[in-house]
Figure (cartoon, helix red, strand yellow):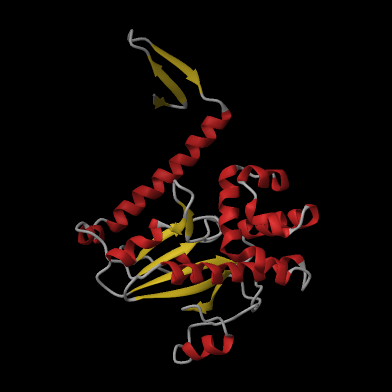
Length: 275
């Protein structure tokens, strides 16, 4: 297929061309793609010289695991515009665990990759965000399960069975199951009924970050790697300032007193906890 002045030209083997008018949806799609390619042209010009320095490979300083939410700009949230600085994994619920083909729960290869192959010290940062849709879906799914049969069976439900509680696809429910198995069922029990629904969800966001850091520490043997838990606050749930990043976990330590002590000589680091 080729695009000719707003029409799709379909070429047949017998050398005739049938020109069909684009429908509104196709036209809107190509208008959007035109902006994508325009932006890419500008990007290619901007990095033309710098990219030549990175042709032999990479050794980034940090691996970040952030939510796929379009409002969470994974590299821009800390003003990173350097090539080769950050290895990124985006997934709903910012979980580090995945299922193998045999159903085993392991650390994602996207997280393993740099710590296993790096020749320098690295950081693995799990970044949650307030108002996370995946954590919200997990919270609401657990509420439905609790009212129906009790939370004792939550971890035994298949993706198809979870669908009857939330209407989500098997793929989305696979992510929800991974969040649940990381510890959110237990965390939900503790926080349910302690505050407003949104405040409880944001507490679970923070707990989910803790769970992911714990899973990494228990299931990896990386060398020269520090594990950090952060929350990107889109809602102003910590100190009323939207868009700020907060240190909520360092190497599994979650005491606010300890976090503030770790950061005491670094004035730009903001440590905070909801739990």
